[in-house]
Length: 119
Image (cartoon, rainbow, N blue to C red):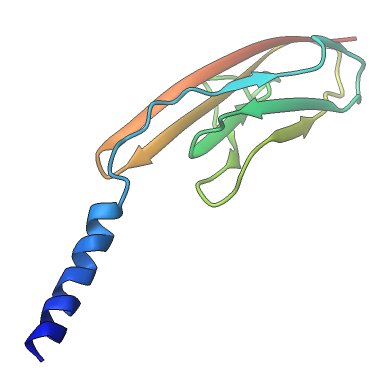
């Protein structure tokens, strides 16, 4: 019986010891096939090493960084490899992706900015 109590005591310690408690650096990138698109053309943003969460700012009026709220496109529960968006008005847009890793120790963030021309 003593051996059973010892095993039951040690099992939670293994789980605690195996938890990833290191706050990871944020090192992600976003690319597109080209920098100039037609209105209503689908733009595919490709992600490499997407962090725990990502917010998207299209650069359109009322959707600029940091003056507005971004659209959450990734949370810790899903993977993110691509994101698709299109613009209905021509112009030059500064597209911003803000991503970060978060745990009980805090949060680390990175901002990626792309400039797109819509004709």
